[in-house]
Image (tube, rainbow, N blue to C red; front, side):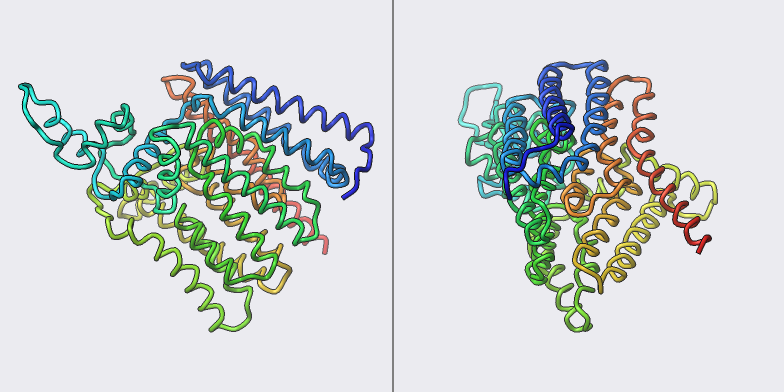
Length: 467
């Protein structure tokens, strides 16, 4: 890489992106202490505008790749943005409270899946007898709750156990060991994961003989910066696994890729959808079965503590899988259609089964189709699988769209980039109590991606018709 000078229009574009990043961080820092509907609306607007600016980044990637100095400067800008947001309170997020509690439980050598926070809170009362005495805690968890500096009392959905898989629990525990019950310690763990992600993405790009500047699609993504450095979401732990998986498949290390799918699935379950794309990279059925078994076996082994403790009556995982619907555009429409057809059975369950079958079928079809092409074809198939999952899922939290970004570094595509750019409109749902914000947020967040898919399909049909 040489320090070639940029054209003037390239300098202006990079300056605009730098200024936009600084303004973005300043606005988030200003909004962080605020509460109420107005700040939620401003946040949604800021994220969408920043996302639109981010869409212009591919226009300058080529220039960045020719200048080591500018690439280093952009890396420093992305790092500075994250460091500036580390002390900021998460905007309209409280998932981190569960992380802190789980981290304390796991670091103490206890099972985070064994008891609900509500049960532990009920067990705390003997610690505070009306009369002086020698009351002892009802459990080690109860004693931990008393010492948690109010963390246990603030856990959301206390009547269910944690939904976060075992490898995520290790990340939470690491933060607790650094500094107990500290949001800042957890954010530092997240920043470490992001630094590793950047290194892995740049390594993968070199393996693909592409400019490392493309890693800036991740490093300067406003949604990534907001939802990890400010929002403190645990999906940050998934990013190195995805980046490492992509590098492994580009380097032809398929067994390592299989293990990394298992690792990713022990952070979030959905990466198991990537197994067909990996398995079909080899030509013989025994090898395919072996790769699939390695990936699924790795995931099953790592998920064992959570699966063994699964109790449908109190499991947060069961509650999430059966009834969670948030910020989705397609899922409610599909459920309404199934309800209108009066097929029989539970429409919500039938819709979930339909979505699962559709996304699973697409993952298989796209993975098989890419089998005989270059590794980037499989990465494209994986990107499209994740996009389909996000578009059809009953839950469309903005931070879920970060799953797409490592794939976009290698295979940028309009619909997926539009989803990442606009899904920040999710926060408009907190702007009012009458429901208009929750009603418009899915349309703003998901409609541009659907429109891009429709336009691409229409253009392809026209091209096919013309022969």
